[in-house]
Amino acid sequence: MAEKKIVTEKPKAAKLPVKRPKAGKLPEIKVTEKKKIVFFGSEAAPFIATGGLADVMGSLPKALARNKHNEVSVILPLYSNISLEFKSQFRFIKNFNVSLGWRWQYAGVFVYEYEGVKFYFIDNEYYFRREGNIYGFYDDGERFAFFSRAALDALSRLNIYPDVLHCNDWQTAASIIYLKGMYYNDEQYRRIKTVFTIHNIEYQGVFGMDTYESLFGFPESIKQYIEFSGNVNLMKAAIEMSDVVNTVSPTYAEEIKNPYYAHGLESIINRNAHKLYGILNGIDIDYYNPATDKYIFKNYSLMDLSGKAVCKSELQKLLGLPVRADVPVIAIISRLVQHKGLDLVKAIIENLLSSDVQVIILGKGEIAYESFFTNIARAYSGKCAAIIAYNQDLSRKIYSGADIFLMPSKTEPCGLSQMIASRYGTVPVVRETGGLNDSIKAYTGDSGNGFTFKNYNAHDMLYVINEAVRTYREPIKWKDVQKRAMSTDFSWKISAERYEKLYER
Ligand code: GLC
Image: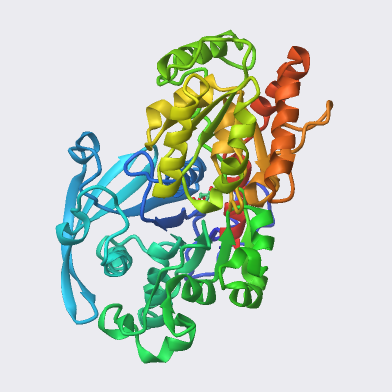
C-alpha cells in the first residue's frame, strides 16, 4: 500500500511566484502517516516457539519496525506455556466477548512492547491453558477459530486498524475469511488489505463440513471459497480470499504449483498464481551470532575461528563422543518428521558411520524416527549421539561445535537451520528444494557456500556428504567454504524490504 502523503506546497516568502492557497482553504500540512502492519500468528519467538514460524514471527516484525515509517504489532494467543519471566511483564488492557458459531467466549487482551514491536496476547484459559504442547488437541479448529476471530475483533477494540493485516499459516487463515466474508460492512475493516503467508502447505486446517456454521459461524454465501473436497479448508480459503499470498522462498512458490509439493492444493495455487509471491526468510543475525551467543562454549567470529575448535571439543565431551579435532562432526537439528528427508538418512546412516565421522542428531517428532535414532546411537556409541528433544541451548552448542550440517529435506518451504548453521561456520549439505535451493549453492572452489544434491535419493546424498568430508580433510579448502558460508548475508534486511514492496501493492 502506498504510504499516505498529503503533499503540500508551502508558500515560501522569498521565492515568488508561489501557489498560494485559495481563500478559505487552509494550507495543507505535510504529514507522513505511519504505515500500520499487524501480524496474526500462532507462535513467535522468544515468547513461544515450536518451529520456524516462531522465528519468522519474532524477527520479521522487528526488522520492519526498524523502518521508522512502519508501526508494527503482533497478536498471539496467551498460552499458559509462555514463561513467567515474560508473562509477569504483560499488561492487561481490556476484555470483550467474541462470537463463535453459537457461542460467546471471553477474550482478554494483554500487551507487551518488545524490541520496537507491540505484542498483544489474547487470553482465554479454556482454549490456551493446556498441558504440554500448543497444538495437537482435539479442538484445535475451535481454538484457532476463536483466536482468529478474537484477534480480528481486537483491532476495533484497541483502535489499531492496520493498512496491512498479515496472517500466517492455517491457524490464522480464518481471520481473512471473517474479514473478507463478514466484516465488509464496516468501513474501517473494509479498507484493511491482507497478506497471507504459507509457511508450509502441508498443514491446511481441514475440518468436517459440519463445523462450517456451528463451529466457525461462516455464512452460506462464501461457501465456494471455503469448501474443498467436501471439507472446510482454511488455508485454501485464505489463498482464495486474501489480497496477496506469499510463501517463504521463490523456489517453493514455484514448487507448490506442482502436485508433488502442493498436498492437493495445486489447482488453487495455479488459479491464484497472479497474486502469489516467494520471499526468502531471513534470520535474526543478532540473536544467532557466534561472536556474542551466550549459549555456546566459546565465542568466535569470521576473523578468528579459534573459539569454534573449543566449541567442538566441549560438545564432544558433553555428548560422550571421543574428543578429536580431526574427525568431522556431522549434525542434524530437525523436527523428526517425514518431509525433513530422514528416510534418506535412515537408509545410509550405518554406511556413513562405517567411515571416520561423528554424527549428532537433535530433535523430536514421530516416534518411529525417535526410536530409530535412539537405537542407532546406542549401537554406535562413541560415534553417534541422538538427543530426542527440542532444546534451544543444546542446539546452539551443536550449531557452533559441528563441522557439517545435514538437511536433506524432501520438501522445505524455506528452512532456517541451514542459515543458522552457516552463520556458525558449520557448512550445510542440503537437497536442492524450496528455500534450501535459494540459500545454499554448491561449492566449486571459487564460489558456493555448501554442498547440494538434486534428486531425493539416499546415495546421491551420501555421495555429497562424502564430498563434504573429503573437503573437510583439506584444511585450506575447508576454511574457504566455511568462510563463504559464514559471510553469506542471511539477515532480514533484503527480505524485509521485499515484504515492504509487497505491502506497497
Ligand atoms: C515452516 C517451514 C520451514 C520454514 C518456516 C518459516 O516451518 O516448514 O521451511 O522455514 O515455516 O517460514
